[in-house]
Length: 132
Image 1 (cartoon, one colour):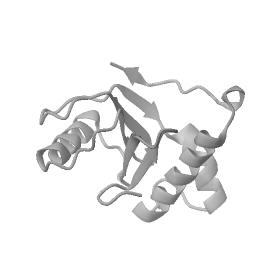
Image 2 (tube, helix red, strand yellow):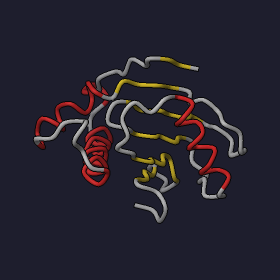
Image 3 (spheres, helix red, strand yellow):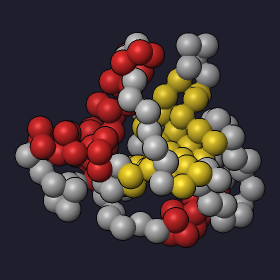
């Protein structure tokens, strides 16, 4: 993990590929997530990474190759997180409504670790709710 970020992922060349901000808030709207991203940018803490993910118990908001201007920009992808995270909630014995920020961070880290170590033929496609 990197200072200031909940999770970071690097590519094979050890370049920062993904930065993840994890929040246990439910029902975070697109505009709320975009404003939070803008606030992060305004504090000058935005990394130079091709992907920025805000992970909530019920939604993933993903920005792809977004520049680091201080505007409130909607995410490129909005994904329903329940199908992905529900097995982890079931395994840990908590619900999306009960999960703490630290526990959700561990779940997201486990999920990302699984993705990183799966073969391409084992991957399940995501169906974005919306795509910009």
